Image 1 (cartoon, rainbow, N blue to C red):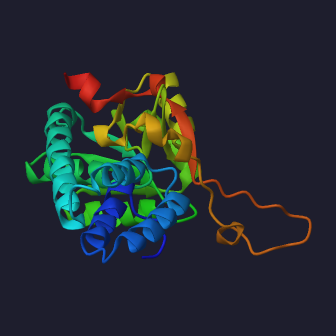
Image 2 (cartoon, rainbow, N blue to C red):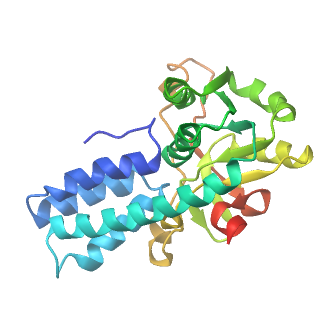
Length: 252
């Protein structure tokens, strides 16, 4: 399994579950666990799954563990989708950023139910996962407006609501793609509501916080080495929860 820098954390988790379900040995699990801790240390749903496996491994087979966790994921996804549909059906122009499979799932369900809305989204450089999101939503019949990243900020004035996913929720902040914070700050300045569509499985377990860290991409994604230029390519940032309303808090 190779490191995935485009998909959302829940999408990546599904691939991980498939691998672990067929895990041949305890030794292979420990090797795979080290790969996950190195590659996805910013994604709580993956760190929490590692914790789940470690607590279950003495009593259950890998197949049983994966079956139990899939059930948890499905129950939480159904809950989040139901709550999100109740709220988002009132909005006609929705701005989102980067790629969240949970956000996409909700928007596709909204469209399937006949809701007529438009999406405003940007490329999400350097991995360009925003384009993948735009194409996927457009293929479902959603009208999509695609912009470069910096232009998206100016389009906040045109929308009714900002919606984003999360890779982790820790204490008083959540973690998402770099650029999320400035979008939410601008939304607050313009008095636009902002909603976090994220599973509660992304609330990082306390005992896994020691493994959490914000990861960065390779400089070569931006520019191959040039004399006198130091390239920075952060993937994730911390955003205060005060800038956004988690969907479960908004609707319960």
